[in-house]
Length: 333
Image (cartoon, rainbow, N blue to C red; front, side, top):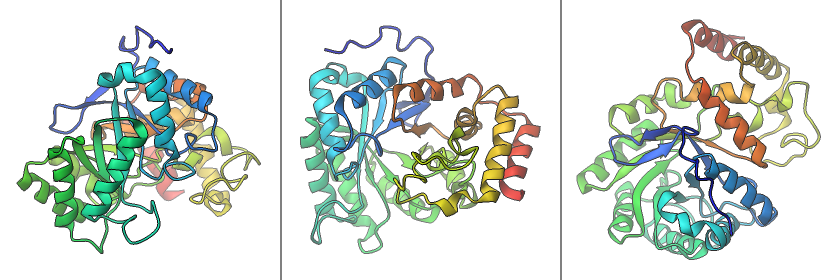
């Protein structure tokens, strides 16, 4: 059985308070969107999870349909918890979500009370848990009254199935309405999970980032490396075994890495080198630069990537000149 590194909390990781709540999250959290499905190797998954925890990453982020196949990431997480990690359950933050397509028929998608309740029950069974630490509504559902969705989240907490709730992919206006409902209910709404990267700044343009910070709501960013574009992987073109080259992602295509984008990535890489960081490390550090993002969700296909990402925390400060250079490269070049 796995035994965690006894030095895992000895300055390997930073922990940030999640908004105005008493919950702390690691600066880097491990997302299980990719590489933890039925198509992946369980022993490889263990190595990734154990490396993360050994280095102070306590938060593991899932959703009902992560895989492939749908739900298999939670099933695999359940196996690993049962065999090795359940002894550390009280040290772990485990989150799940529901909102996107999960099962056939009218009750396997959206934001209805029926769907959210049934989905979380399934998730808990797959993972062998009595509760998740955070349960999210994964996306706004225009076909369900927002009050119904928020009341479902409130009920889930009161039933003891989740300690905290969050939302994901909500724009500022939608998030503001959800916040008002949950505040009235006194529901522990502590976090929002949006996409955010140097190349994807919609939460700044929309005002969501400042709204969350001003209202004491945590923010955890997903896709911080823009599906791998902000890594060194594509500096010299598109490798055949990459997500783009291998057509492995429905969210990333060859047109996303045209000559203009490649030039931007190469310029950013030069700036990162001048800071003594890899492009990956600088991209993660940039998200954490101003203290308004609680945690960044990283993905990993091998343990070494976890270790490289953690080194980003050695320098999350940027000079005004560096920030201007990044803006110039990303927004104007």
